[in-house]
Image (cartoon, rainbow, N blue to C red; front, side, top):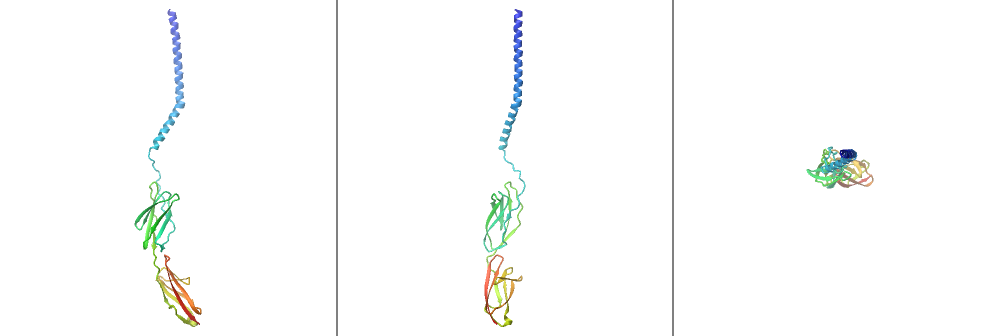
Length: 238
């Protein structure tokens, strides 16, 4: 009886050892599987969660470089037109802030950095400058101070001598000098030939007369393009 019980116990012990060995092998296999497969998957999952977290955070701009000052296209110093388009370029997407005669106006540049301001000029001097502000809020330096003078009044012009319709006789009177006065800094022409004037606007033009009628057109053109002209007819007999 005792021998039978001992045999049964020995068989049971062997079963338990075999089961324990199988458990240990399976446990090791599971750990290896977790190490080689589970941890990378866990890392990927953590990465996805991290990216999702980042996507919910506000984007912080790292742009701290101010844009260059806006550049205006070539502008006239004087004009006789009371409306003008101030065109130029700056950084694409920047806001150009124009200060014109003390008032401010903004314009957003297009994809090429172009901008336009349409302004009505005041009589006399019109002063303006501009700055640029990029999308990150960086502010450029101010442009130079610009000035455009609006003037639509024709310049004064008088022909002081000789008188219109004057008669000249003989070879001693063939050569005459046309004298006159206009506004300073105007361009004087006689029959489209430029005549020099002094700082006070006085001018002279010497010419040799032909027999019969000699017709002249005296013209004064100011810096804004306004024009005044007068006709002069002189008669000569040799």
